[in-house]
Image 1 (cartoon, rainbow, N blue to C red):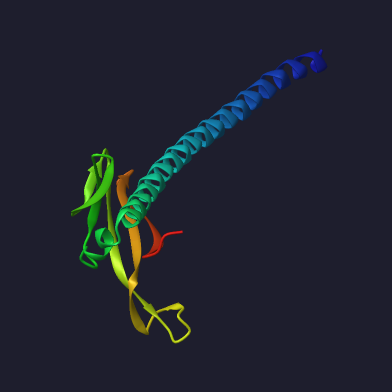
Image 2: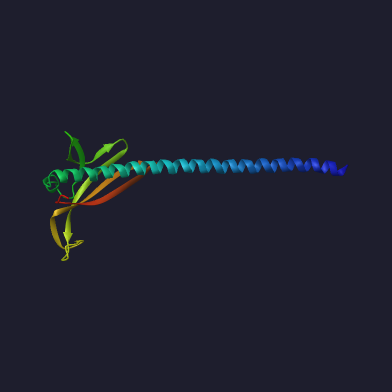
Length: 157
């Protein structure tokens, strides 16, 4: 008789242990699911920001291809935002806000060394500009920013 009573108590303890393990596993899985959703949302925001920055660089290339003076006449180190009017790209001074993203690009002077390579010091190249396209946004109360850099030169392929 003692063996039968002992087995009944052991089954209840096993059930409690299994319920505890399953509860713990579900809690861990819920946490992982929540983390995956946050990562997915963050990746989506980054992709949108990169696309907005890429569009600015492509707009500047289109401006350059139409006429180099569209680029060379812009003030250096001044923020500009791209505009599209009559199927032609242009630039307005200042930043632009699209949904929750703020974007602008700046142009910088390019210096070349004695070997005609782009360098940190040297002679100014009036036929080349460095463009930095920046996009910023707020995600979960944290400021985020990405920047893409390219060079524009006064030549046509």
